[in-house]
Image (cartoon, rainbow, N blue to C red; front, side):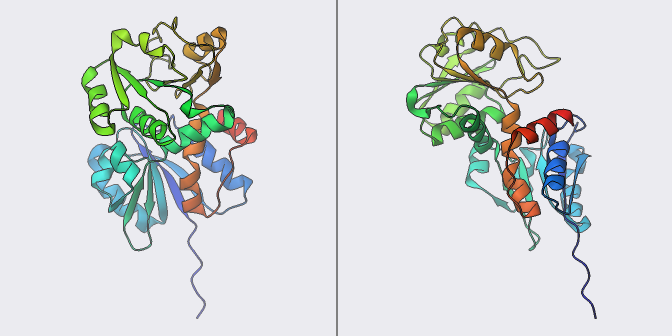
Length: 280
């Protein structure tokens, strides 16, 4: 008897809404570029349907999914295995459906953030001075964890609602220093790295209005927003003389570990990758 042909691996991104996601263009490009069999599908799944979806998807041939808003926290309660960093951050963005039936949850946002900085600003030195992080949501938690891990001596955090920033300090320790939102401009003083994790400056969202008077021209400034690619913050920081890094690379690099686990090939983030995602 001949063996049944191997199933073509399926992966995708789950969230609600999900139509705006660039992930299908990214993974589709890599699948074509490396000549791999597989498909990557956007799936709009409501919160009420999440548990059932995670039970059914592996039976349909899915080997894993990326997770976006509003499911990144909820999936931790549905996973069987949770990496330490996903537990620390309190959210997962990558699920692997294992052959033994268990769901493995990880968070690759922080490693993607650092990989983007290292690729786009090779001279960046995490130990050069404090980092200033605007925002304290899920993305900020991943960024703060990653900055501490690579040796940033102090991470300053300001959020429009202070309790979320205080929670970051409680979870990550004394190297996190909290500033009130009205003092956000002051925390830029002597900061070697500045990160905006808020939606301020994003297309369709309020403008970024934090004063940059204290910004050091030697600082590296990055925005995890990538619509538009060149945000107001990045424009103003470049005018001051800072090195700037846009947020698209974080999206590209955070996708690498999942793609490798699902499709068996570790992809490279290249200028062609960026172009394909921007075109898609």
